[in-house]
Length: 287
Image: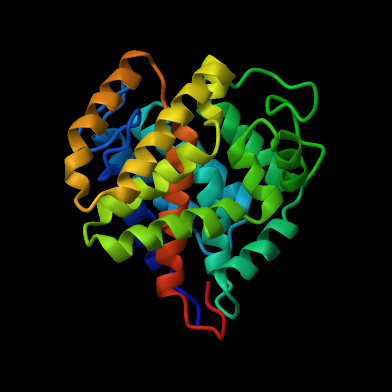
């Protein structure tokens, strides 16, 4: 039984909406816009990207370029490149309904080719993310000469999204899912589970979007504060008690131009993976 593309697209849009519902400090959410972007921009971007991202039978590179182009046409700016890069392989894996999502994803990543890389390079150049610059090897402004997995491996040490392609999305399936499951078991409101995922990533790694734009010292400062909030959330009986402090930190980060965008992208991918697992036909070891 094949999962309909419409169901995968709906799961993607729902994951984007769930992430926007969480009060994620420094990032856009329903409590506050930021960085010259609004919640409406992200909602429109999710709707625009969903179709190309989940096109049945499409190669991963074609999904990425189609989704970025559709987003660009809709909102005129880069709102979701990292989300698309992470979610395109997951959407492709969801079509392989005879195995677990994680195993299917491993197959998708293994079969990425040079054409996938070339299309992804075009998408990245079109999105023009802040701090992109040029690379000595496998520059996205030139034609690809290696597979997408090989290109991502080259960037893995400096970019946490690229890192996922080298590890089978380990951060998503292990850290992200564990954070979500633990929070969901304690609180029914999905925004706190999404926040737990976001803080889990923010506390664990120097956000590579901040590193690119502002340097490692700024990213480490954000990470340390993220660790404090993660600890407070885990110790809290009622997360609403943290909301005022979360939003105060949110305001401070935005005033300083600090956007933990990589942590937010990983959060969307985690929420998307969870939703896909929920709609895939059951297997002996679903996950």
